[in-house]
Image (cartoon, rainbow, N blue to C red; front, side, top):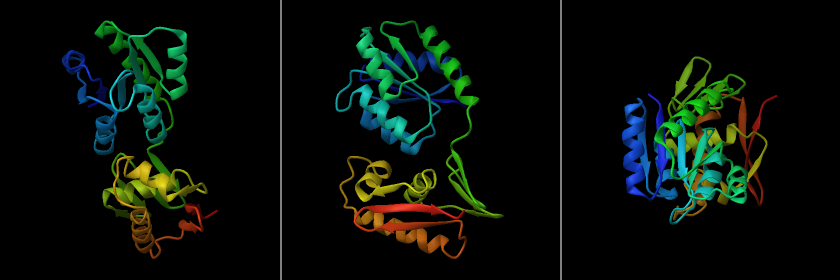
Length: 225
């Protein structure tokens, strides 16, 4: 089943779209603001997000930008504004489409179907290969040769993030923001602990990659050539 995330602080919009999209065969996940939406995305596989622009705590442009950093899913922005400057800001944030309120639910359905078709034709970025190691974000499995490894969620997300961006150097603060979220109240030693666990798990299993410490900065994953 295709999961659609609807993010809007208007309860009536949430109810309307839930009813309409459920009738179309979609599973609908609801969030009243950007913070709730990011929490849902961490826990649930979502295939498309419909995001309202005007919301408390985090507006739709910011949420769109955050989703785009972490997930390869289509995004439709909903807004009461139709000025070209607002559309420009939306597309700069990373939205795929733009729908002005009020709108017909049928039109939203057409746009959802079109975007899902477009993304289905793109390479699957949820699977990353390095040597004989494969990490699959859909199944949350790491495959090394014939061996399948299941990791604790945060270890998996940290490894996936680093493997999908090999040779890039990330600060501990950046990794905390990407993996644990902007509201995480722990300290950067959390990253060190998770990196240590990943090194201990994989050092004896494969030499396809190594997580390197970049002194004074953070961490980088180096892949074997």
